[in-house]
Amino acid sequence: MLRQKIDNKSAVIGIIGLGYVGLPLACSFARKGFKVIGIDRKRSRVNSVNRGESYIQDTSSSELRNLTRKGMIRTSTDYKDLKNCDVVQICVPTPVTENKVPDISYIVATSKKLSSILHPDELVILKSTTFPLTTKEVVLPILEGSGLKVGKDLFLAFSPERVDPGNKKYTVGNTPVVVGGVGETSTELAYLLYKKVVGNVHKVSSTEAAELTKLLENTFRNVNIALLNEFAMMTDRMGINIWEVIDAAKTKPFGFMPFYPGPGVGGHCIPIDPYYLSWKAKEYDFHTDFIELSAETNEGMPYYVANLVISTLSNTGVCPKDAKLHILGVTFKRDVGDMRDSPSLKIIEILKNKVSRITYSDPFINTLTLKDCTYKAVALNEKILKESDCSLIITDHSSFDYKFIVKKARLIIDTRNATKMVKEGRKKIVLLGCGIPLNGL
Ligand SMILES: NC(=O)c1ccc[n+]([C@@H]2O[C@H](COP(=O)([O-])OP(=O)(O)OC[C@H]3O[C@@H](n4cnc5c(N)ncnc54)[C@H](O)[C@@H]3O)[C@@H](O)[C@H]2O)c1
Image (tube, rainbow, N blue to C red; front, side, top):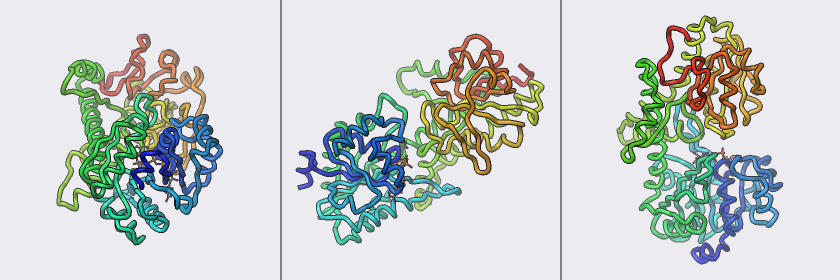
């Protein structure tokens, strides 16, 4: 029955958690003709979707309005509205605690609520990134508390989400999907489902293989970024331009893939996911040294950049205590309005009592709230650049006019090579990974 419903698109799709992952996913299923019921515990999000107002950058309000008007997407805060769903996908957060321990409480809470409304012939897919065996050892027993048996009257799979916010080329609609189920029928049903929306679906033999796939992908990124951050700190001493070296290395058509240094890593994936793996590995007396080392390097970058600001100010004869610092870009990555775990937060935290004033410009963020203070974005104009002793580029948004910035700013620290195309005024620029000019500019 379920197979048939998926095939003729009469299966009703439930999505729990309407954030960066859940909302675009809801749209991609609705776009392909599936009726979608979205659940979120935040009433404001549910109301926004029902009004057709998107709060996620990659989901357009006009498309959302179109889909809600046609009745293809309906949302609610009440899990009872999932009662008639044939498939439910869980897209809730999986953060780490302050001590970097995985917090799967959202998955547990969602699974418990779901178990009270499950019916036979239903498929549940966990999309939240998590450590291997969560689906089998945590979600499965909770769902079976309903009296239904997984593999017999209920089907369960894990499928990692690969959405890359801000990526125009690869979206949820065209990025290949990996699926692994508890048993062959679960895998097959999840495979058929994603085939309907994405086309390119790759099966693995178990939920734990699918869970580990996501952690391998993000650990790979984390380790490679850390490697380039280490190179940048080394080339700062050697006086060699790391960006030129990466450009040269990437002309090799095989065996090399470019990664870039920067002020640190952020977002809900790269700084968090590897900790899920290192935590689980300890259960097997295994220490994931690469993960620990790359975390140490990447988490050290905001401190390195803060030190770079202080030492550069001193070298140019400005007493840091009296200096005005202007930050360009505070989100965790270019052209994305996501502040989660952004390195800018750490850099501001370190510098706020070491310089006399910090201001920032970011087209995506109007207000920035730290533990004990709030900053309001200021317009990026000649006045702010001229009156600031140092302009620090943390996020290289494409809407910034870098030629104008270099022309008007007194001193620029560029952590992203955002000013690479600017030919004039380069003496004012201190570029991360190119040799710290210890003898003044
Ligand atoms: N953001 C990304 O780029 C990305 C990419 C790939 C994978 N992931 C993974 O996907 C998962 C979700 O991430 P996200 O970025 O979409 O998070 P998010 O915070 O943007 O969205 C999660 C949503 O779940 C809702 N929620 C929390 N608990 C709930 C509950 N009990 N019932 C109903 N709704 C609930 C929240 O209100 C929120 O709207 C995480 O595991 C993350 O690691 C994220």
